[in-house]
Image (cartoon, rainbow, N blue to C red; front, side):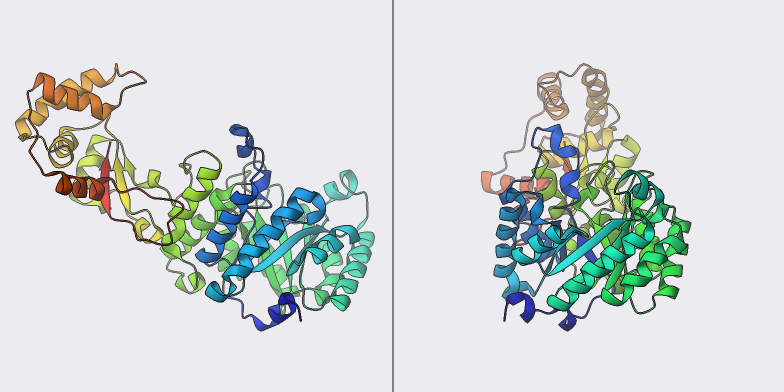
Length: 443
């Protein structure tokens, strides 16, 4: 008996929400890989991402079919080895191949040892006329025939079918295809391939599909062309969709798709805790940092689970955060691994944060009256800062050279402890082995 047959999907009880992460399929189509002349994820990148996803609690990971290239085939074998090594520690994670309804795609995935096949076929009028040129009856006939054969010969495989560009496919047209295939698969997908769906349209489509196919699970794939990927996924989940395609940081073709951590974060804020079962939420920010490092960038500001979401520039905000962080940090980001706040020194900083920075972080002997004078000088000077300088360096220079401040003589071991508490960093390669220390980082 093969490992695939031993870990039959029929023996797995799906959770209320199952993430199908497609960072290594959809995410590989992001133009961000070109920004730093990277172009593709290396095999080591993929191995690290797969390991991180499994430890985070993701039970379904989607890849390209191996027929795409020999490199993809070799990379999948390496990723499968990572999964197999983690089975005894983390349980089974299902590896799925994104396949056209074409025998060659299917055979390549079966030979490689995938646990399931995610079939797709364009069903919208645009797909039928400009992509493959087949009508709805031909689509249904081809897909049904191929899936019937696979189901008969490989009954252990997980099978899904999606009408590509489903939200530009009239509902009756979609059902002409799905009616023929529904008895053969464990779920049907509704990909918003070009990002045209609206939240109300998603709710209507999910409700109609649930009525027509009450015994089938539904899967959603939402693109962000209109900025609706996250809210569309949330609406789908709240109206009964169990499976949602995500990527880390929401990367993907064009504007990307739903961010995994943003989806889980919003469900947490909405107190939808039952759907968060089995996910290592404190690993959310570190896994975002891991993916960002592969792209040679920072976690982008549009990602809710980011240090940017706890970074403050305005003097009024900075003063309040020093007194009570919840004044401008209303959401529990610390429970998602963002374990520190960051206050940026600059022309908008008030005397309060300058006093705090010089006294508590740099250990200068300073009173509030002096801090107010230094703040005035700093605000004038910082507008002329050079590219090779930092605001913190300018501030310390003013404090020492123009105001003659002296630092407290704190023994080295204790000074290091204070600095570590105030400026603790996140190591993307060790985020599962250690908790991060809370603190406020001023720079």
